[in-house]
Image (cartoon, rainbow, N blue to C red; front, side, top):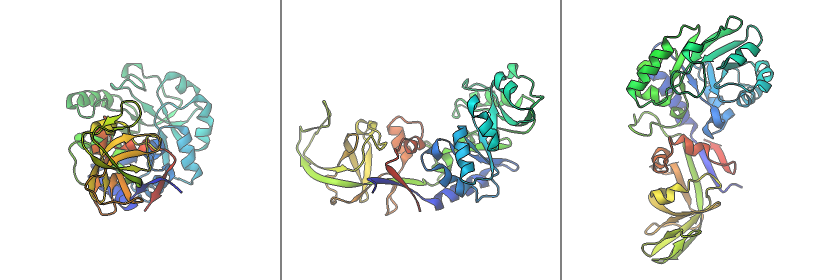
Length: 344
């Protein structure tokens, strides 16, 4: 009943998790980041695989609602809410045994005595958290950890500066500052735990280790095939003017499904029968690709990113960089609900 589907390879996902755990320094734990519906792959589905790893005792989410959804699904491990919770949701969060992050004094004063918290430290990102010089007293609360976040995980000097600021703060419990990119670039900053989101599903966008497999593949179908002539314009307004005669195919997704319109002008392609077919137009509910010289028929499957069924790879990281996105998981998270999620 769906016009496209996102296939999540559970074997690759579990292999990726195992690889990350293997890479961790002794005594360091993996905290999977399952925010944004596990980057669009399905919060409770991903959590069910994570829960099979005895080495993982904590996951993190961005909002209280995500933590409650996990508890409702029977998730037993600790759940850390990264970011200040809405005051109206604090009681429900505590009833569901969520670990709250605390990043401003008013929240410290409003929490019940003995509440287990982790403290957010602003070491340089300037998004959330206490500045080191403005830490209040946490004497009425149970501080079980503290964390910060690198502003630029590719900048060694800036990371080193933030690391020194963060580790110079004396708070009890575990300490963590690294995410996927900073863990890949500078594993020496791992501390007691690392928060990993993107690396659960795909390798780095730049220099790749080859040890992490792309876990998700988006596939759709050809809905029409037709010929077009040099000079024809595709799309609304000025659109795209064809530079040569070609054979085109419409496919069953568009920007309403989460396909980036930027891929048309950026020279992005889809994968069809092992061949790359450039995008020529993108509408809300369909897109046009150039299938000149490619044997194909209406109903044939088209891979938009990830692996096709023959094992050919069109990396979401490659497409993300073309579309000026930060990472390939940004493409995952933009997929709408009319894209079916299938775990195999």
